[in-house]
Length: 115
Image 1 (tube, one colour):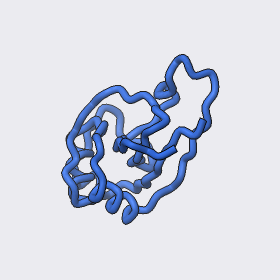
Image 2 (cartoon, one colour):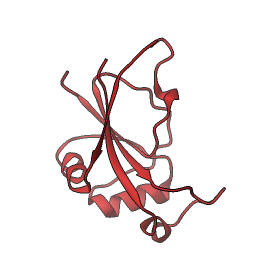
Image 3 (cartoon, helix red, strand yellow):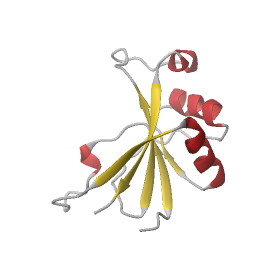
C-alpha cells in the first residue's frame, strides 16, 4: 500500500495499536540520518514529538522545522512513522537540554503497518 501520510515520533508503544485490531504486522527498519533528512525535507509530515527540547534538537539535526506536538497517535495502514529513539535511559523527571540530547546516542527507525 502506498503511504499517504508521514508522522514523526519520539516513541512507539503497543498502545498505538487500535483496540479493535486483534492482530497486526509491523515492519520496523533502522533508518539513517540522511534517509530521514531527505524524507522530511521532501515530503509533508506531521510531528508528534512530545517535548520542545527534543523538537529543537531534531530541528537542528535534520535542518527542517519540527514542532513539539504532544498528542496520542494510533497506527494507521496508510501512514509511515519515522521514529527518533534515544538509546539509554534518561534521568528520572528531567527534561534534557539540547546540549544534553546531543551527548546521548540515538537511532532513527521507520515503522509501517503491513497487515
